[in-house]
Length: 354
Picture 1 (cartoon, rainbow, N blue to C red):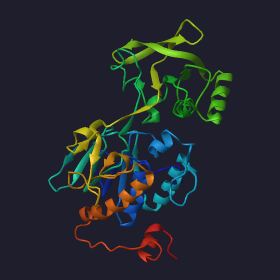
Picture 2 (tube, rainbow, N blue to C red):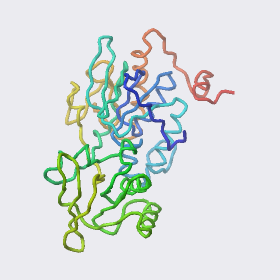
Picture 3 (cartoon, helix red, strand yellow):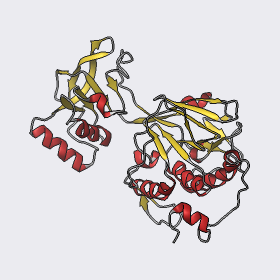
Picture 4 (tube, rainbow, N blue to C red):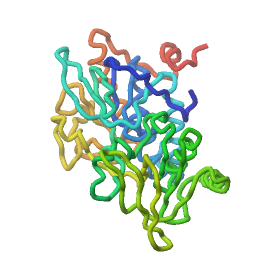
């Protein structure tokens, strides 16, 4: 597994039991994996996005960040890759393109978290590192879309096989739209891309590959905006496009993938019984624990007197949080504080021992 290829958790119907479930795979959540790993704790991460990195990846992957200690300058993508590499010895497992939905307390005091994909995770510790909330996709802004959503209109790809043999229309002009067009084109019956103009925000290499497919008539390219969906009982038959050049066009398709960007929402977290202050979670400053024992909040979503919304603050919060989390995960084990510079045991866990 390379730093840019996080390990996905295996599909299973049985509850997945671990030490710590981290909601949010941004920089703070990724660094929490490292700190937990040093203490011998296993982590699973849940994130609404289809890749780790949070705001760093979605909002400024190429913009420079200047306030990471000992790193004078790095991009959001570089920071994410470095954090993934740092966490790699501890084998974190990722549940991506899934939203953390319900949370219930079990009889043994542990927590059960269920995601939007039906994944069930059980752990003594839940860590909310969700930034300012969950990134959720912007929906197609048309009346009557609800019956199609989740059936033939999708805002994310969870299983590529779902699109095999489909007549697929991809809407959008960013990296997600073009990446999935290129990935699904070989297995779909047909593909088309619609964007409001002939300018794309995606990586130049992806744009070049898309245009090559268009030139080969392996996919079609349309400029305009979707104004109407056609179909019955949740199954699409086509869409009407208001063309940028004027007039309308009907495009036949049985599946639409729409990528119109993301917005921030607190989502189901608001119903978890936590103390909220202006959509932020109130925590103590000793261990960043919430009003619910065993549930912690770190990073931008946590609030306390003197809080600074900086990545380095999130790293500090993750380190202290793990000290308290260890007591929940290993109540019969004494925690001995060790330094990575001198501890043989930590060197073994990091895979750097001679």
